[in-house]
Amino acid sequence: MRKKIFVLFIMGFMISLILSGCMPGDGTYTSSDPAGFFWGIWHGWIAPISLIAGIFKENIRVYETVNTGWFYDLGFYIAIVSGFGGISFFRNKD
Image 1 (spheres, helix red, strand yellow):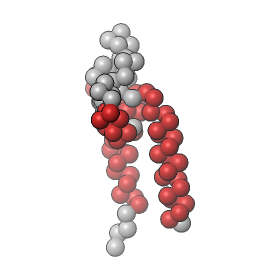
Image 2: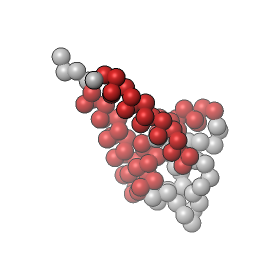
Image 3: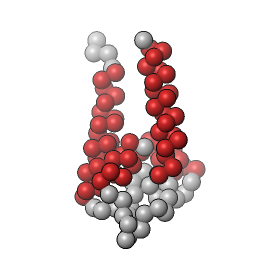
Image 4: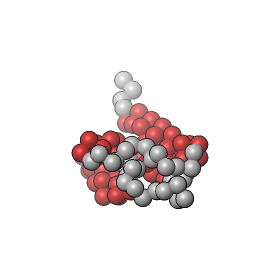
């Protein structure tokens, strides 16, 4: 059972790594085309990967500064809470 969970975790991590081409701060968004709600969700999900990539690439950030405002923030927050809060489901409650 642990091996299956480990394999699923690795597969999820690899898929996230492959799809992380849309990291915040890469210059894709402009003031005429800002990042919206669904991009906020995506950026929240890949925040740990963006944090690590930001160490090596100066322009990569965890959070997109060119966004639609609170709507982007809501999506980002929902993804952060659901993504990192979900880790508690795998803990033993001994």
